[in-house]
Length: 470
Image 1 (cartoon, rainbow, N blue to C red):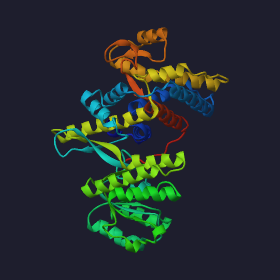
Image 2: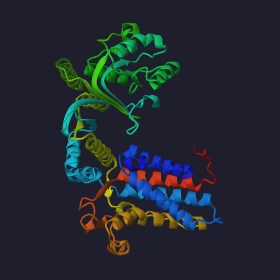
Image 3: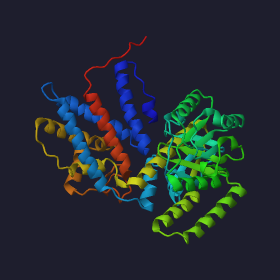
Image 4: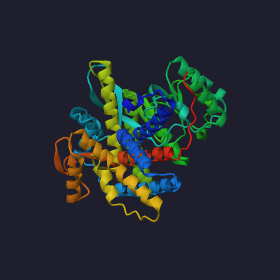
């Protein structure tokens, strides 16, 4: 991703093409943490094959539809081929995604042991190390894109944060003006967990965009009594107060002591991670609350109630891993940070959707399984374009090692099997998953879909308008 971000061409039309493909690669990285190169290679291959095979007499729209239909079939096969991650394969995924850095791969794999959530930060020393914290996860993301301050991960990230927790709707900015002022005076960002009217939201968005305040808003998770329970849990875990309309609270009662505190807050599109302050008072309050929740399980009447109480216990006692990245120089630190960040996201993708044979074999095997019925000339051309393009990632890997593509692909086709392929690094044929050459399913799927999306968009473009550069 760093390489493609650095490419800017003098020709405005050519540069526009780079920007479009860059956006597809960026989307792959944001969704799954890896697959940027595969996205670029596939998009290039589809466009190259399309240019060679499509003529003026052909119906380009029908060809695009056939390509998209064929892609959906390949995607289903990728899902069907996917295998669950085990301890060993988790280490392999992390290592490969960290550019075969064994130390970084082990660090990421260790971080995911016993933790569902892994974060990354710059170390204050020259060392790279792993720490685990107790953290809280909410199934709610930011309410506005204006709150995003880390565009690479598409997240809002705050350190040493204040938290206002409420189920009272904020219908005027004046009602929380003293809270915002307290945040600014303390030079600390503010996370508002509560609903607000459109007018208030628009005003806060504008002030965040202008840099006047550091603030983020998420809508409270769940509904009804469950929402109240989860917000109460969160208030206890962060050492704050849950301001509720059920207890007659209003915003004039909000004080600095009533705001929750967190060492770190990470707000994504659909979830929020809160790492509370680990002071003795907060830790004791959490322990006592967990004990109370465990006692309440005995009084629960249904399996649904028991399940929800266990979910609450797990949420406020969950473990979150943080990898701190350090190095001797700033350049080395940045490069290592980017690699470990990619490995974290790719490993997460592997845990979510499983793994496939790597080195381009997953795509080849999924395509071979596809039963695409050719009913027209457009279908025939689409099949030819995708058939050739799907080989490009594997072909590039083979040719980059100085080997002959034709002889190696012939051997693979003769042997058959979904996982059989060629380990280009060690020059060995065999079971790719068994040899540790694997890709997260989510990465491969996103790369394919994003490459097809951007290439078909370019294919359907007949005219480009650009300003002349001075």
